Length: 66
Picture 1 (cartoon, helix red, strand yellow):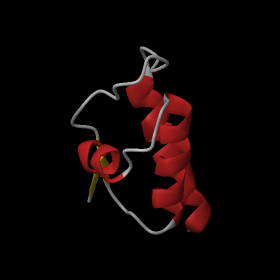
Picture 2 (cartoon, helix red, strand yellow):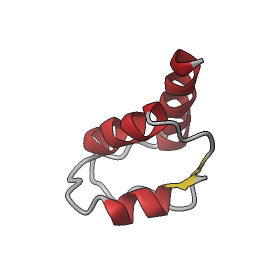
Picture 3 (cartoon, helix red, strand yellow):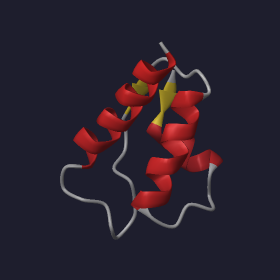
Picture 4 (tube, one colour):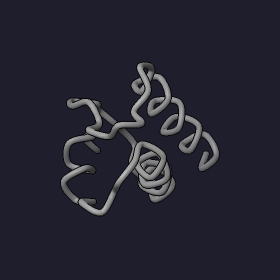
């Protein structure tokens, strides 16, 4: 299971929500099956609907791999 907090801790180099989206997509494409959002991304460009966006990215990446 991939937790958002773990992803953020493993990737201190991330500077924006856009970079987080790319990193999440890569993790999903590498075979992560489950994703949980336990913290709010700490970036200034994090939109109000960040949960929906991240869930959509993770879900669509896993569908491509099916």
